[in-house]
Length: 64
Image (cartoon, rainbow, N blue to C red; front, top):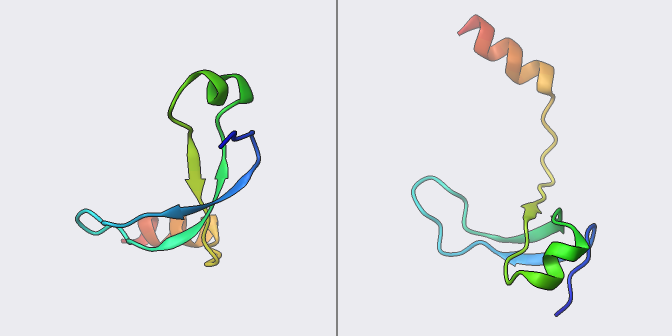
């Protein structure tokens, strides 16, 4: 299967290790087309439907 940067793929994240969530979820290919052609490994970022505000998590860390 040829992967291109920006492709949306289905990831099977099972089995989970430690506190990782082991689910099937979508992911986006981040590695470049040249790397995907040459290497047998692609860099893929899992996507989530949960939206978190970066300022909310930063304020929680600041206040303890």
